[in-house]
Picture: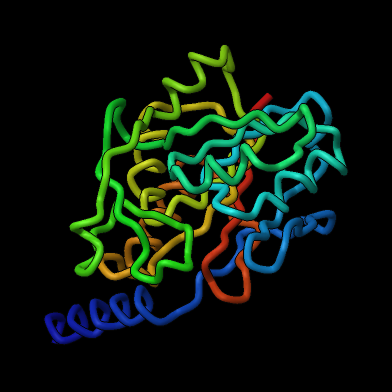
Length: 234
């Protein structure tokens, strides 16, 4: 009988992992969503101001979120994207001085990674995930660990970290938790819709962040954009 109960408990756990929605831990009434519909994230604004250190990884052709932060809080945005087309597009824009761009990516190591273009050539978002029809068009880009970037920019903390990095978020989250970096808020788009990833990997990433003291306070309607806050970060 005990064995049957154990099997039922195990089955319920598996079903929960795959099918039950991931829900917020806390409600932040002041939370606001910034950016265009295809590139928006929800933040807790109380700790965001002109002095905030904000990193934005993955800008593509849409920096509406970054520009909204600059307009609303006069913040400086450190933006990063190693995609050549994105860098070319950024260089053609008339941008405020608070938008500081580097054409590098973030990863769990310093060096080079192989980058694969999207299967639809009209899209900009490249990924570390190999596409069957794009492998021949891959190229190498420079990446750095988040800790390396922070040291290079002389930052000992981050007030807001945004990641829309096409599947690399899973290893980067592991790395920033392993390094025990001081980050107040993390907003991230998870890419479990990609081939090679599953919703279970997103659940594991959320669990790791929760275990490290982060509280989930927003999940988008499409269950891809997640917002976390950690108390006690000065």
